[in-house]
Length: 404
Image (cartoon, rainbow, N blue to C red; front, side, top):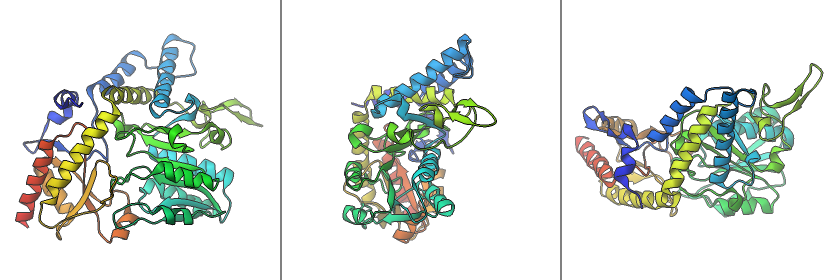
């Protein structure tokens, strides 16, 4: 069960006002707010443990190193990876995908080889592969979706050819809220001996993510989407892949030895972590994961599903509303348009009423082109939101519709 009063008290920002009105924060797909324990962990690290990790024999360095590596183990356990060596810290989902795109393609892709994605992908799972098109001549293939925003699995499988080198798909769409059947996607791809990268930026905070059960080869997510600090991310990769792909960046920490004639690289996961890592951020991410685990990801998922159903039913009553993304299996995102009101106008007016939503193409322009729309209003839910906040959103939208 979710104790919503207690939870909201742990997020100080939720008690502030915007334009003289209580803040209703419904932009959680963009970034989540931070509980007090995460901010306190950042303060503790800087005030008590601040020293460069892995390189010092002195006490502070040893203590900071232990905190950083314990954070790696926390991430490993949270997603059920087989080993902490399979957890690479990055700056976020985007860098994690760029790392795989650069290193995997450099090792395994040649001109004419193909990368398969879906048409609901975020730009961060499109542009890095297009960059490899320019560098190596690989070709980007796109699996279609239906009008409800659901991946067409039969068409997806038809897109896999003897030149397909990797499948890269989102677990949950940041626009549609569609929950993709990732285990089935992995099964199909593996049947054709094709590895799979899962973008879990929108799923780790809403659902159980078990990489061994999923059997994906790579998985990526961002700290700031799951109540942790910005600028920290995770790349999970099976050891068999991380061992054979080359480093993404060069510098300190990722080396075993260096001479002017030759450099040998460090072992996993350090081979992919050039330079001083954000050991403060990794520790704060671990705190956020522990916080979520204490509440229970299943409890969070059940409560958010209840909120999603409630919001959908309430919003359906608004005259002229059109939902973008009506998949049967959805997570905590509602994208919509109302009549011919531009989404930017809706978002701006909602803001003046203290309600924070996202408007625009949500870094998914190709998806907007497919639906032939300029963008949407997106209300995205977290476990600290309430039915009362949904009611405020609906009342505000009804008021705006009357204005127009």
